[in-house]
Length: 321
Image 1: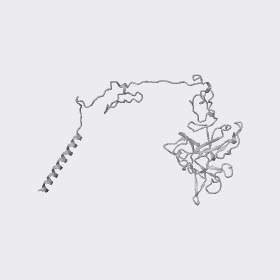
Image 2: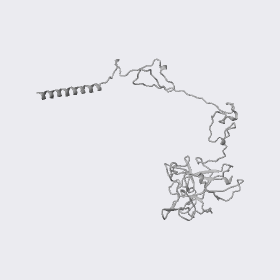
Image 3: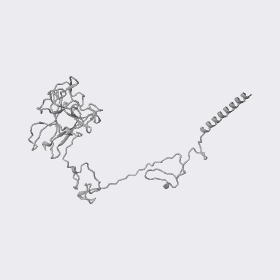
Image 4: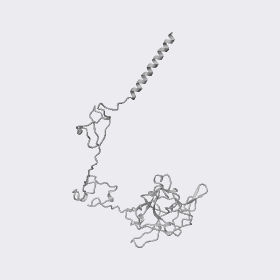
């Protein structure tokens, strides 16, 4: 009897718990689809919106205790046009020739180097006497002789296409290269010379530091003991003139390695000689100084990886001032 009574009690509790759980589930699933007026939505109107409207951000802040479950913003189709400009010149500001000088205009102008600009004249001009060219527009450079019978096979100005034949130009969209149609500039057609001659540049006193960007992968061949022979090379030659008309012979210009980044001697640059890991004497168009350092091998390394293999090579033109 006792055992049977206990079993009945357990069954009764189980039924009660099951009904309770079922009732709770039905209560959670219930929702209100209409309001007392029979509508499925309620509209909250702010009669005095100026109390709540933030005209700067367009937001509306309700007083504490009020709640909005949903809101809509109506955007008008009309538009407003704003037109305003301020004129700054030597006369309208009263600063005269000091208009561009940050010491007098409250720091209104900012320069990388103020000495490079005419900051104490009524008109602003660049007076750094520098020279810059990134080939975005055609330049009066002269390319060398025809290669394999075609003049266009020498240096050419071009753009990369979807990362071919190089990932990108060093600056801007255009650059000079030896071949924009092939990954192999040699093309197995024998020895020849790529030449690119710039227009004349006047070297001002104190403005003799120059540089150019180079992304190169010049031919080299294996030598014993994990060494190499660098048979193709690149270098800079200069002509000088004191009157701009009588020009001397081309002279070898050493690289300014103190102002070179991305490549160095033994890494994208090598000395010319007869040993392994040097520029070979096959690079012999001119008479070069003993131990001259030239561009060879590749500029692709960990130092230039962030710039797609482009290095900056320095030149010292102080002897031509």
